[in-house]
Amino acid sequence: MCQFHQVAIIRRYISINPKLETGQELKELVKLITKTDKESFIKLFKVYKDL
Image (cartoon, rainbow, N blue to C red; front, side, top):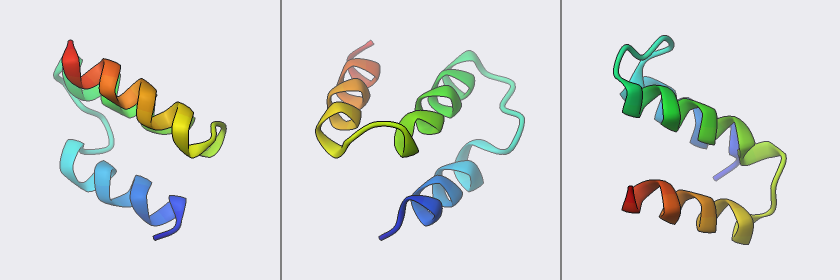
C-alpha cells in the first residue's frame, strides 16, 4: 500500500483536526511517514504506542 493511502486511512480514523492530544500526536507522527524510511517510522511508532 502506498504512503498516501496509509495516511488517508489514519486521517479517516482520527479526523482532520483531532481534539484529543493522542490524536494530535498521531497526526504529527503520520506526517513523518513520507520523510523517513520504513524502519525508522516503525521504531517511532513503537515508541508512540508504548507511551
